[in-house]
Image (tube, rainbow, N blue to C red; front, top):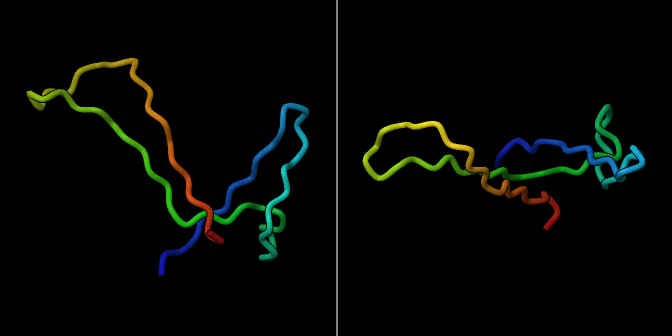
Length: 63
């Protein structure tokens, strides 16, 4: 089993969006089990500068 990470989210008024974690020092955080991201590489294998941003995917631990 993986070690979960903890995520704290804030709304546009800088108020904490409470999660369900009750772990000491991580109260009200959102427990996550996985994090996925993508770094595109050209087909020729050469690394070049790119302004391309891809979505991050975060999976909650209690699903």
